[in-house]
Length: 561
Image 1 (cartoon, rainbow, N blue to C red):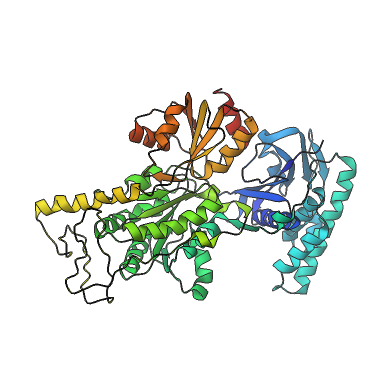
Image 2: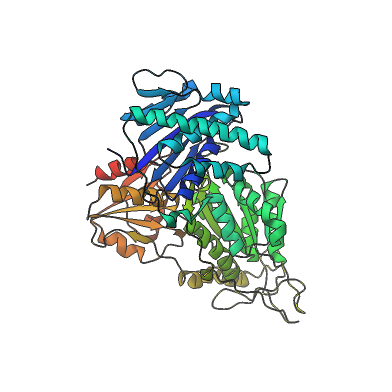
C-alpha cells in the first residue's frame, strides 16, 4: 500500500555530489507540485568518508527527518550498512553491487557514468532513477538540467540528460517488480513556492531588515549567510568583508554601526568565543549589532559539520559585565526571515546586541516556502540629527538615549570602552556609574513590552505540554501530529531571551512538562526554571551531532503518557 510520504537516503563519499542529488530532487519535486525536504549528514572532510542526504517527498508539507528509510541509494559499497538501524522490512536498496538479506535491485551507476564520460554523472543517474520511482514526468528533470547547466555548454547538458534518462528508464523495470511505495498528488500551489536553505532565509531577512555591512571569518555552518550577501552585495549596496579573524570581524561590525550602517556578523561557537570582548564593547557603547550564531557541537572544533543546540548559554552569558541582549531562535525559514529582519529593527531601536541563534540542521536543510510578505517588514530610522549640546548617553527613564552618528548634525558623537558620563567622556564618578548601569538595565522595560509570545500548537486543554525552541519546531510539531492525542500540545520559543511572561501560565496549566533539546544539560529548561521557578523534570535530549527524527521524538513523548 502506497504511503503518504516516502523517505529516500542517498549515501556516498564526499566529492560524489551527494548533496547535489538532494538539491536536484527537492527542486524538481517542488516544481512538479509535491512537498519535499532534504537534510544532509556530512563528515568533516573534503574527500572520502561517508556523506548522506535524506529526502522526504510528501503530499503534505514535510520539514522534518524521518527515522525509517524506504529507498536507499548507496554510491559506495560501505554505505549500504551505515544506516542499517533505520531499515524496515520494506526498505529497498538500489545498489551497484549485490546486497544480501535485503530487498535490493542492482543499478550500474558508476559503470554507466564512466561510459558517459565522468563518474560524477552517477549522481544524475540516481536523480533520474528516483524521479521515476515517485512518478514525476521526466520533463521536469530535463528542464532543471537545462537550466542548471546552461552556462556549461551543450555537451555538458546533453551528457547530464543521457545520465538522467538512464536512471529514469531503470525505474520502469524496478516498478514492475516491487509494489508502489508512494503516490504523489501534485498541487499547483506548491509549485509556486520557492526552495531555499536556512542560510538564504537568514540572508534574505537581513536584506529585508536593511543590512548594509557584514563582516565574518569563514566558519561552518555560518558562512552561507555571508556568501549569499557577498553574491548580491554589489546589486544591493551591501558591503561584505572577510576579516583576518573573528575579533576583527566584530570590531569591523561595531565600527560600521557607529558610522550609521546597519551591521551584522555571522559565526559559529568557536568564532563567537573570540567576539565576546567586542560584544561587551557593544554593550557599554550601546552600539547596535546583529549577531548570527549558527551552532555546531563543541567544545573547541568539536564536530564542525554536525548540529547541536548547546550555545544558548554562550549567547546568554557571553561578555563581561552586565548589559541587555535579545536572543531569537527561529524554528523554520519563515521565522528565520521575519525574526532576522526584526533583529535589525530592535538592535537599532533598543541599542543593544540582538542574536539570531540557528544551527547546522536549520542552516543546511532544504524545503519550499511561500513568498515572504514584505508588507510585514518596516524599517524605521532611529538616528537623530545632533545639536551642539548633544549628549550621546543622556540619562532618562527608558534607558534609550538619542543615537547620533558622526557627521549628521553639529554635535560630537563620542564612543569609548570605559565607564563614561552622559557626553561619553571617561569618568570614575561612582554615583554616576550606578546611574549608567541602571540606564542600561532600564532598557528591559521597553524590550519586555515587545516580547514575542511562545507559540502553542495543539489543544489549549492539554495535560502534557512539550516544550522546544529553535530548529526543533517542525520536528516536534510533526511528532505531536503523529501521536494524535487530544491531551498533548507543543509550546515553541522563537524568542528565548527575554522570555514572555505569559509562559508562566502555560507551564502552570500542564499536569506534566517535558523539554526537547539538542544538548546534554537542558539549557532552555534551566533558563525557564531560573525565570519562573518551575522545574521541568522530563528532558528529551540528543547531542550526538544528529537532529531528532519525528518517530524518535514521538516514541519518547509516548513513554511519558
